[in-house]
Length: 288
Ligand code: MN
Image 1 (tube, protein in one colour):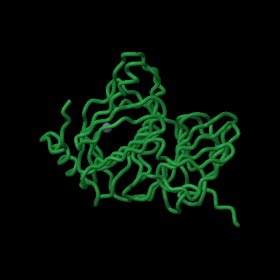
Image 2: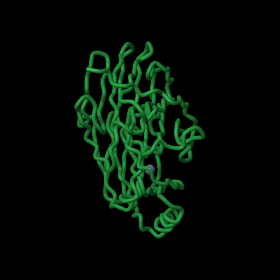
Image 3: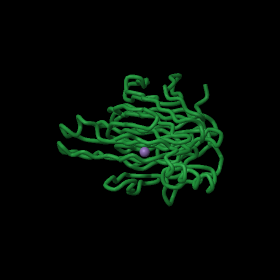
Image 4: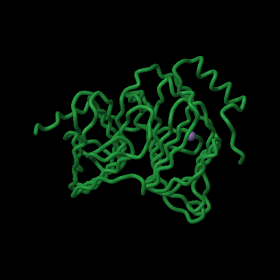
């Protein structure tokens, strides 16, 4: 059998600090001056690890979204979620919340009550995933994917958690509107794994923790390797210490992206409409 053709690393991009809300500082490899978005992935925000003292409440007050999906992967600690479609739940370590804002949702994201009571560490990643024009005005939805529902592909020094898409014949539980891959890869100090990626899909590897060699190119923690679109597979190897990585891929949607704050549409007129609809209460509300 032929070795799959490797996907070269096109660029290594470090995160910049961003402040999506008052008091919330995140590391963000994109969007930024180097890379605007990686179609269909619009944003990667890595929050924490942040030490929370007992009694220290916090989070994001009710706010709207329209036109895309938010995908939150909790790594440490827990968050509580409430939204205007009646969705409610705890996102716990290893768990993923896949929220389809589509035509509109208002939600709040707070530190979980137990975390506030006892203190602890909070760390996670929030991704924004675009929707195609034909799906932007669909009804909103919500997928709660606790760690137990996410299959793990084990090899001697690597574990690959398959959230969406496929790895080594194992399919992730997340439903998406366009084909995407989301893998959470945990490598031991001498671990490595080869990941096949669908032909023609955009793809990137983000290092949450540890230095990884992506196609033999070192990628420091909190940086991403943007991969060439040509090629079939990427090789990930830990560089002497344990590493934790995310692999994101997806079929490019190829439509205009016009974004303003929490709204991502195709035209400026649609953004103004989203703002008007939100201000008129048409994106729903939360009784807090
Ligand atoms: Mn939000």
